[in-house]
Length: 198
Picture (tube, rainbow, N blue to C red):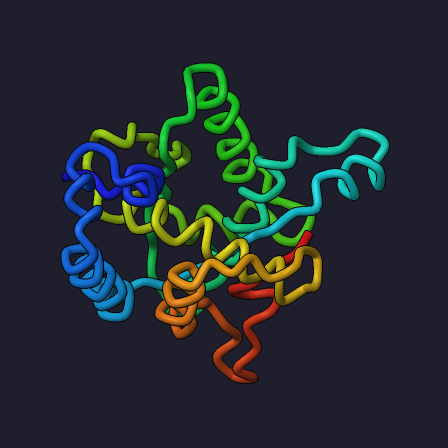
């Protein structure tokens, strides 16, 4: 079974069983437990697209700009831990995947405004991003799919960019993931490390 946020919310396919309130309660508790127990660090990059487009004469593609910001933080964490790691994204379509591969390769080869290429090449195992479809049933991509929306929404509310939505379960997912944010381990600072606003 592939955890797919829209199927879970809309009770489609295998998640049709969640129409039963008892089943939904057990599933929700289990999902929150998985989030709490899973060993991962999280970087959430949120961009105000309109402000980004207005600010720069030749703006980067917002998705690729977010990728660069995320790679800066991921590379920083890996370098701090004296480790290396892979980068995997979910497929978005043939053209989008090609553009994402090129944006990743550009960061790997040339660096970003924040870090030179050495920072990324020391931390990342490959000059090529791995891209897989949702149906590949990869645990990390499934977890990212479940977390992305509620975490993004919570950060937008924190910044005052949107009002509270009343999504109770989304708030519970965000609370379960709170300790997963990347942070500056000396100062305990999350903003700029695990919560990035562009």
